[in-house]
Length: 481
Image 1 (cartoon, rainbow, N blue to C red):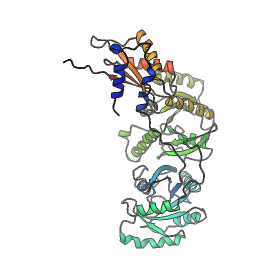
Image 2: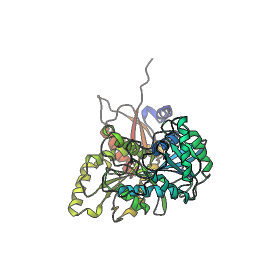
Image 3: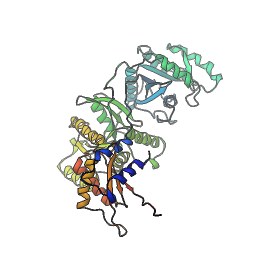
Image 4: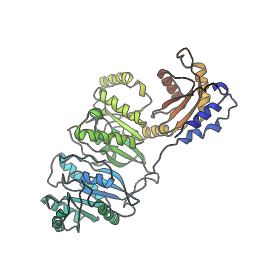
């Protein structure tokens, strides 16, 4: 959007870039609404679960249904472990698609939990896509899964995947033996038959989901982020009250973002568990690279992020990098120090020193000490989330900002640069989500002075838990004729 309205406002703010007590700042308040923010209400959608044994192409099919690469895909079986929800639209109808891990009734250990997640997804779905590898045919695992599906009382669509040409279509007749109706031949990789499959999905899906939580505006979106093995999935399971995400002692169990509706302090929230970030996205590879991209996208799709830090261990560079990622994305921030049941007095004193040293520029972040293992203080998360989101949504009127700014500039004028002192002529809050303060100046403002203004802005108006962006617009001098 053009910045001209702000330039015009700065021009009209006063004489020679100044303002007077008689200025009616209400005349300029509309400028802070011109950029606005995008807000997409989230209404109830019917849910489609995609299930099947490992490595039959479920995630590839999910990406085909979505029309974009959102689910993590790799040739190695077992990449998807949790149940992961995506929003889809076909022929003008919106619905949710739940990707699941490989379903194997004979699995043990962590993969038994993966199978359990798939079964939970089926129980909560309005319809089910049962994916079978047409090149392999019906396996014993497929037959066991079909037996469960026949008792599910949900519409089930059998998908014969990896049918890449017309010759392979004839081989799909064997899938009638599953007792789940006509198989639908598709090639998730190449897109063959995907349109007809989506038409069939819309035919069996109800207009509204069987169960719906939250109000018309939809629950606020919360991303759970942190490095591997800090307890993100354990925290999600504690909040949900069930084994919502797969938890294992092996770091990096979560690959895809996992989302759940959580009722916390009499309010429904949408929590998204994400993959642990080991390193920079640019230096990650393979599955880790795509998981990092999904985590970054989950942060950007959220409104507030809870950065989980292992309070029992020293802060790491990766902890600080993740906090910076949330700030750069412009999302509200809550820092939760997990495993507090393992923190003794010595560790508390050293942690305070680490915070004073390493997190001095994010003192504004909401902070809570919790334990996913014992449930300690998890009820305090909701008040801190509300505080952070209220700050993230907050707007300050143009009049209040400029009255505050006139006092600050009079007491602490901008530093001289190149022999000249810049003049700040006008200011307005251009955005909420995150709050963005735009300053119109006759010259460049040093980074240190911008940080000073941000700190004073927070002291005057709050914004606890939300980043505040300070943007400087330098007024170009009119050329003399």
